[in-house]
Image (cartoon, rainbow, N blue to C red; front, side):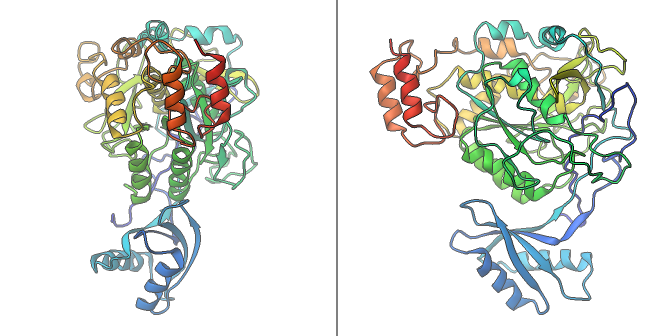
Length: 492
């Protein structure tokens, strides 16, 4: 348990403006967020319930009152509303947590407090410019050739995969997402099914500007589609319009994506706290073959930020059009690889120098930040996964996809002598990653033998009702009659 650690759930990506002006929101690189001292998260043993865990702790601690308020579905992980003894300080709570865990009670695996997050800004170098008048230039942005996307597109488009985007929501009506949004998205900020990337009128970070991060999730999701146009998107809203979130909400969002049977999860979010709840959710995802990709942060340093720093997460730094580390990007031992993510601050974005993506309301713009480098990697993970429908939903698949991506990266020591060696495996190369595998099979060719026939029919029947299966052809989270219908129409 980290004493007085703070979670910095943040998109670390941009401030919303209609002219190229840097926004002065709180700088999460230097200003830790506040702890939610009355919210306790408990990981219990399989045989215990939330009320039972609360009762044990209350019996051991006079003056303590715990009320279970939420649970990770089907998992012994609970959120508790806590009322501590009247004379306790936050430091006393942290000492109590450490002491309780040290006692070795079999009912408790771990405990931690929930934390609030802040949006990026200040000196992070994050920008967001809404000034693109021609959406045709989006496909010409410099990232396309830097990561050899045309070569990758000739062999795979990501069909048959679903990428969960955990963010501020998505404008599902934007043309870039036509036919691409799968059912089952959820808003864990408001507890509704409305996952739209919207303005809620609040200034939750208290910086004087409301909803400066609206559009972030839409932009991130469009970068996935830029790389993998055949992949579908599961929107999971875990951040409000100011880019603020909670540790608990992030864990809930990851588990929701896991239960929907996605193949890739993009988390353009960082925290300086190594959360047990988030780690447990990620471990469950990767054990099922799901690749988790996260932004490394825009602090221009070597800070350990999570979940990017986890060994089973692809932590992504950002580079510019000259294959150099972006000035704002983090670097160092926790980085797995880098991808294009830098744009200059100009009135009219230029595809030769900018990262271009979708904005709510059918608009397009330029963004800058590791938030936008990460979904490029997530898109390539979808391409590689689509090449191998025969791969099982287990950790060997997650590892194989990561290795296909990392071993194909381009070394940056020549283009960036100062930082090239501190950007993990190097800069993402989609073309090389996809070239290492077969041409993506047709939809329904579940064993990759070039035919859609009885063998594929047998695979689908054997996996009937499964959530984690390439036989879920329509991406709705279960193998059922709708998938069988799609298979039969493609029979050859």
